[in-house]
Length: 121
Image 1 (cartoon, rainbow, N blue to C red):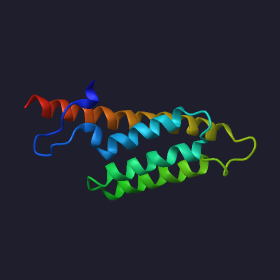
Image 2 (image 1 turned 180 degrees about the vertical axis):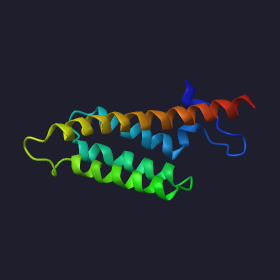
Image 3 (image 1 turned 90 degrees about the vertical axis):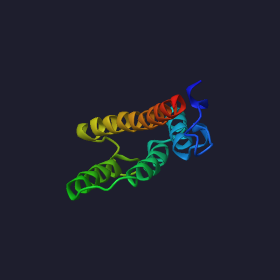
Image 4 (image 1 turned 60 degrees about the vertical axis):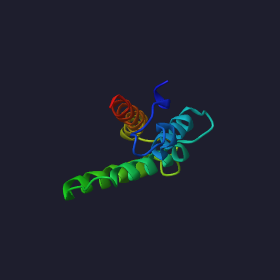
């Protein structure tokens, strides 16, 4: 199984011990659950996004785009939408959910790939 591959020799811990991997797995499980609302299921992905974004410096334009995306994301969460939300809100919500799932899978994939590369050394 890919998740049991050892991380770099200097760390001595497996990829399963990485907090990013666990958070991504928990987020994907929350999305899968039929009883978790959109707002509750997406908060963990927001945490994961903040943790991964804090690893790099961002330009001012990137921060503005991220801020706009977060505002639109907040508008589509439960409680802000009316009983009959407009079509743009439904489309944006679907795109957001697909993007969040893809982001969690990408974090898992990059962690597994980095672990496999380090295991070959």
